[in-house]
Image 1 (tube, rainbow, N blue to C red):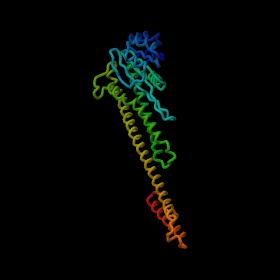
Image 2 (image 1 turned 90 degrees about the vertical axis):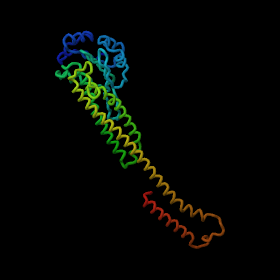
Image 3 (image 1 turned 180 degrees about the horizontal axis):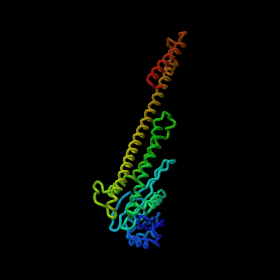
Length: 331
């Protein structure tokens, strides 16, 4: 559905238009631009908007179906961009993504939102209190949305770093019982980082193109060249985010390897302890087994001190084995 339809002149919101067609006409005659926001529209609801603004059918199809990678595509009459805002739930430790599709033209910007974690509401409210930015035209809307989404990426990366430090402390904790389910937690955390990476990684090329950096030196249609320094700032922040995500991914892999190594060492210690106790149990079993044989000619059987001697030998051997295993750390 259409959440909002507004015409902006010189950075300030004007009277409410009768509809998308009327809004576009007002914007072009007054030198302003129209901003239309939609939330999970149906094909019928989006049909009128796509016809008025002459949006490309392929871009319209992507906007309706959602589940797109972050990207930037240039068509004859508009620019189409996909962003994936990230939502982090600290209670459950899960990362989820929403989607924002942006159509940018000569005098209009159309935003299509999928999900509930989008920053569009706060972006629009903030821009309407900053007419000096909104007065730069529809490009300012694209910049504000991208800047807000990327800044939130930095916040999520910081929260993930904090959770990872707690997980790291748990892995290296001497409390064995407390790390019983650590492996599954580490794997779940790695899945959240992967979900985060799917939102931040593919966005690097579109932001570089808008910023005019690297191989993307040419200006992008419908984006003013004066806006490139602002997009370069967003691109720099995004680079920091991607570096943080890569660092988190490497660190969680190292933590998983360390945890598996600890489990292996712990299992070896347990096996050594079991082997030591089995060796100590084998000594009396061997001696009693020998003297339990029903042979007639066994010289010790008729000796008066044979029983206490055998018990003494058992005790001495057990003490010697215990001290030996204790010195080697097997017990």
